[in-house]
Length: 443
Image (cartoon, rainbow, N blue to C red; front, top):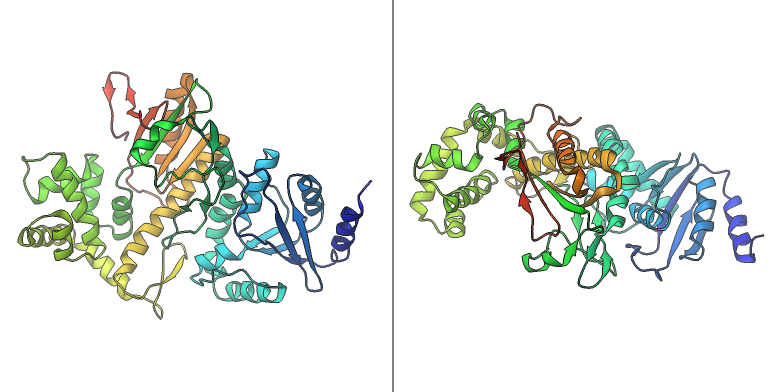
């Protein structure tokens, strides 16, 4: 038996079911699933009607069951930031959202296609017009990326990670990450504090790491990190033979580069750090003076080093120079159709490398989720943190390693290496040792 308010909602929904396309959004940009008292309004627009309904813990099951059998049932849905609703659903039910509808998230689609508008459409007509512009101009280019990466991220992967949480042993509560899909300019996820019980892995200070632990004392954190991901993508894009040779040898890239450019014998950790601070910034367009100031190295020495880098990797700079000149009215497109408006052409180099790396890493995040479901604790750019039962440490490490080092549907034959650490809390992570040998890089 439905209440009067529930019956009214059913009546409104029934009056628009003959239509096939809807615009769906919430009245709050961020839905705080970590706050049990949080409430929000869903707004459903059709060509003929607008429906607003308040959602909170008391009526969520009713609202969702109606939506699932109506507008989320074989309809076309234009929406705005729908991942937040899916995370709320995951938190309340413990299940991933499933739907037969075609869902087109404008916030994600506009960012992929280079049409930045941080404001959601105000009504059905505006939503339809904005989606139609994308479909007409960009859909042929971005549909594969949207369907294969962004949809699984929105529907399953990110809601699962967001609602998994991490144990704060000092506050004695579970804290959660919030992720914005396409949150950063180059396509990386961004994470920021919009939840009541918030955990920020990207900005985690060393002194704070001790407070975070696993939900179970028989579990460990497993932290996998790609090494030299952007360098590997740089080689994949430019096909530079010398860069390929160094990466193929499997040694530490910056050690090899230092010994090749400066001194084959006089090497230490500090020199590796300086080499790392020079190479990619120079590739991305930093000038010699800026590098000199950042690294605290004499300008004349920096000039010699950067000249040698250009000489050793000619194909890298030839390919990137051509890419930076190949713009479409100030817009640049990466290998997979992601488009950005870039005013200063040298910044396109950072875009093509980082956006390509980001797509690869997000695709691997989807693969990891398929294998480990709710064991993923958090994700930062090219690093993945998972929970692992102690008795399954070696088998899980082997399995994760295989997933991360396999070819992606987006990138093939890319030279990769990963490091692995484990520990009972985030400030006691140690390098994984296999047998009698300590392997920093598992090739």
